[in-house]
Length: 416
Ligand code: PAM
Image (cartoon, rainbow, N blue to C red; front, side, top):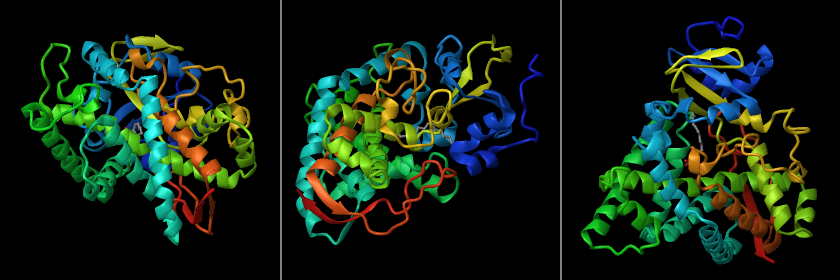
C-alpha cells in the first residue's frame, strides 16, 4: 500500500501546475520532504518524482512507456500527433536510430560551421541597426541553417514566417488559450508545408541529397518495412528542424549569463573549447527550458516501497534535478565550474533527457545543441563587441516555456 507516500489533497491541481510552472514538483518535494508524491492533474492521479535514483527507474523500458504519456494538446502543438516522442519498442528503436545516424559528430560539426558562417554574415546587417533583439535574430538564423543542413528548400521570403511558426509550436507547451491555439495553427501550416516538400521529393520533382535528413525522412521505412505516410514523414522531419530553432532560447540565456556574470567573459576569452563547453552545460543546467518529462507505468512494480500501478502517469522533475543540492553545490548560483572535472553521468544531468539516446527517449540532438551553443557563445565573446542597454531581462518560472522579457536587446554591435 502507498499510505506513507505524500498525497496532495483536493480533486485537481492542473491550475497549480500552470501557476507554479518549473517549480511545481520542486516546491512539493521540499514541502513534503519526499522525492515522490501523488497529485491529481486533469482529473487523474499523477505520480511526481525527483532525484537521481528516480531518473534511473524512469528510463527503465520494462517499467515505463511513452505511449499515451504526452497529452493530446502537446502532440497537437509541440511534438506532432503519433510522433517519435510517444513511440515504444521496435517502432521507436528503428526511428530513433535514423535520427541518431543523421546527428553524428561530423554532422554536428557541419551544422555548427553553417552557424558560424551565418553569424559572421549577419554582423554587417547588425552593425547598421540601432538595436537588435538577440532571440528574434537567432530564431531566423537557426531556421535558415536547420533547413540548409537538412536539405529542405527554403525561400528567403518564407524564413521569418516559418521560424515564427516553429517558435509558436514550442512556446505553446505549457500554455492554454490563445497561445495554445496559435501553436496549433502554426503546426497545421508547418506540417502542410513540409508534407508538400516530401510529396515533391517522392514524386521526383524535387531532388534530395541521399545523405540529407530530407531524404532520410522522405523515404523512411518503419519497423514493418513500410514507407510511412508523407504526413508522418513531415511530422518527423519537423522533429529534426524545430528543436534546432529551439536552441535560440538557450543562446538568449547564454547572453544573459554573460551579461550578469561579466567575469565569465574574460575567463572564456582566455580559455578554449573546454571552457566554452563548461559554460554551455551550465546554461543548460541553470536556466529553465524542459520542465519535466512524462511516462506511463507499463506494468505493476514496486520501487522504494511505492507500488506503481499499470497505466499511471509519472512526471520526472528536470528543473528540480538541475537545482538539486545533493547533485550540485550552490545550485542557485550560475557557475561554469559546476562542470569542472564533471564526471559525465547520464542520470544526474538531464536538461534534454537522461539515459542512453539509442535505447530510450533522450534527445538525439544534444550534441548538435552543444556544438551550436559553443560557436554562438564564441561569437558573442570573441567575434563582436556590443552594448546591453537597460531592459527587462527577468524571466518568470511560472511560464512554460519562459524567456527573458526583452529577448536580449543589443546595441552598437561591431565586428571585432
Ligand atoms: C523541441 O522539441 O522543439 C525542443 C524544445 C522543447 C523542449 C521542451 C521539452 C518539454 C518536455 C515536456 C513538455 C511537457 C509540458 C507539459 C506542461 C503542462
